[in-house]
Image (cartoon, rainbow, N blue to C red; front, top):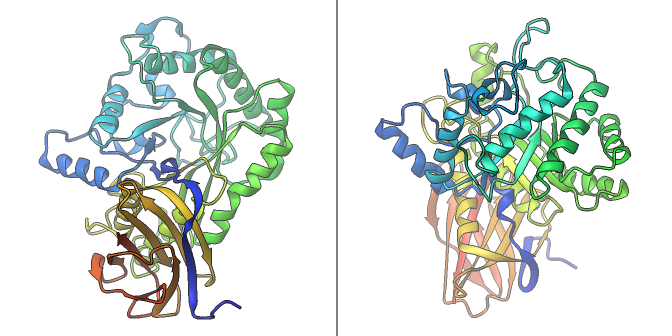
Length: 455
């Protein structure tokens, strides 16, 4: 019978495969504007500290004001022109920010084809309209892909820029798609077939579902199967404060894809974020609603959010998810890494901790959870002389966590840092005896520990 005081168990003698760095990706990168200011050098370094694998470029146009970038209507604004003529495309600012993302922040680029979101009344949408000619629209998208992967139109041959997503949230009416579901499915299949025909070496997929509306998902996958074409990845989004629900979704989608015969189609959650309620998040919220949504331990920038991030990232390492992109979009908005007062938030420090874990470790080991609020991931160090584990208590009531650890009996040094409501990655003492590690939170609530063993 398991000791009731043991919160989790980590077994460093039981291999569990390699860590997947692609699960630690983002929807943000350093901005293009103001590159002449010293503050941008700071921003570049902050992104390096978070050590994201890749960045999805959806919504980049919204937080780089005045720049015609990324979105299809900015790159190819006049749809009556010839998509085979490179003079009809405008790539310059998109080229520039992709270079910043790659060279200054060290992230690969996951490219969303289509448009950013339009938060307008239902009768005032301009970029989420149904294209008049699906085949011509597909040719325009082929020109964009060709520019960044084949060097076309004085472009680039980015060998690691392999993920290309068709649209974003087509199941969000008007704000992201003004047509019917049937119209979008027809567009999706048309574009998928066209791009896979010219770029078989790339991974083309989508559609970045806003929610998992299963009738729509089934119809989309069935249409692909009927057309004889398989998406290389299926992507969707989730905003929630239920860590277990978010961790569990990849297995459900993996099962569905396999049942449909798409066994090679990857799973991709490319927008996710801690969220209790949309009240207070939207720009129309009152001051009081905004304060309740953003401030305090359970606010969008608080410690519950930071520990939620680490709980999810830890859990996903043991689930059938191929890539994950945190919606840390735009450094200075509600989803960014700074709070309302331009102070680095708990979300930033949580991403630094996980980035550090991936930088130092590679081969993960088995973990077991015994407390519902406790999440763990552990791995051997790349240097062959250390091992590390992340232990996260998300909204837990116990002030002390006891972790059973196997395989570290010969450790010479053990040290830990904590992230909690008052401390941002600060060293803390640990108690180690009889293969038990005691981690003192000092109070109830959310906290994360990064523990390193040296031998």
